[in-house]
Every structure is written in structure tokens, then in C-alpha cells.
Image (cartoon, rainbow, N blue to C red):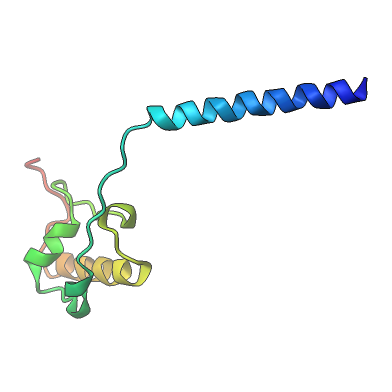
Length: 97
């Protein structure tokens, strides 16, 4: 009888795996990553046009999964954005959106 219980559990696992595969197909497509790693060598807080590409319309900093940067590059960009905000070159918030 213990053998049949194990066999029954296996079928439940197969059903669960099948359901997971169907869920993957139903998900929305992933966003396309874009990276500008070649221009990140000289990340500067004074380059507002460059930094504005990493900020949403509302003023939020875009995450790594969207920008496609590695951790070191993302930290440099975030630091530059925060410095530019302190110098009033970039807004903290955008009320017009």
C-alpha cells in the first residue's frame, strides 16, 4: 500500500509541473532590457540628459532589471542621480505627470 501512495504522489507532482508550464505561457512578455554600459565609464552628476534616461516620468529611479546594468554601474548611476537631485539639477518628484 505504501508503494501506491508514492505512485499517487508522483502523479500530483506531474500535474503541478504541468500547471506551472501553463502559467509560464500565460505570463506577459518580459520587458526589453537596454544598456548603455559604454557611456557609463564617466558617470557624472552634471550630465542631466544622460541621467534622465534612468528616471521615470514621475522621478523614480529605474531598477537594474529594466536598465540592464550590472550592480556596480547601477550604484554609480544611483549615486549620480542623488547628487544631481541635491544640486537641484534633477527633480525629486514630478507633479505634472
